[in-house]
Image (cartoon, rainbow, N blue to C red):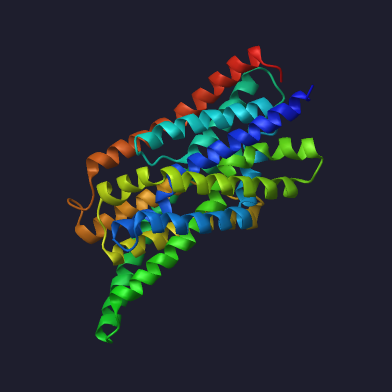
Amino acid sequence: MLDIVLIYAIAGLIVSFYIAWNLGANDASNPTDAAVSAGVLSVKRALILFAIFASLGAIVQGRMVMKTLGRGIVSSIDPLGAIVSSVSAGLWITLMTYFGMPISTSQSTASAVFGYGMLKILEGSATQVNVGVIYTILISWVTSPLISMGLTVLNYFLLKKLAMALHKRGYNVERFFKYFLIANICFSAYAFGANDVGNATGVYVTTISSLWGVPDEISMTFLAFLGALGIVAGGLTWGYRVIYTVAFRVTRLDIVSATAAKFANALNVWLFTTIPYILFGWGMPISTTHSSVASIIAAGIVSKGLKKGVNYKLVMYIVGAWVFTLPGAMGMSMALNFILKQILPH
């Protein structure tokens, strides 16, 4: 009979791929929505670029955030807890994706892991929740969209001046910004892969390292490749659902405002992934969705005005989905972990 830990590890890898699929399905819009909204790329071509560069980001820098989710939020997590936490986050993401709602997958995953940690504490376990990391992540969920909006506004005015200067000198402004926006899609997709692959795989770092008897770095490399495959599959199969919501229903952008939004989003996500890792040894799992949608909203307002810039009714629905994600994923994780541990070996 297979060892129970091995069974849970295999099940965990399957679930990890499912979560990565969810990431691609729900978050493919984050790097691509502005270019699709501006008519620069078709949904199909935008998703192909997303698949290539999100994979690259996951493989090259994905370990930075895996470390935070794998051993940052809680001191330890058993195989069953890792699986159930992932399933809890995945079910919530799938539901929201079905309705075309761009929610925070990082928020879903971190909330589910936090729910596991809180349950273990209530059970009297020695597992500890790193309150400092939780506090830092919560701050990032609030500050990242605000920073993204600020960067978008700044970018917009700078790029408008650049557009006028290029026009005066006889350059093809439309062509310049088209290629600039495509470059930003690539950068944004790379930053997304680096920041978000840990949401699907980070909770399994401890399990895989213990099972295989290898250092965390090797486990994280393997998990990065697995997560990249799942993200690509999700983006190419179901990514269009949320893209249509954000690209066409929140607002419609011209090529300058679209470029301003995507450059701000890409820079914001990459900085939150990289700078904390350099300073503290772990990347910050911010919501790339919060950052992306905030940049789209800011671009719509700054280019079209406060009243007509965005569809405020839809924005309120999206924000409502964000608010309920925290207690939803956390509560689901606590409930499922409690129920399954009564009937399954662990």
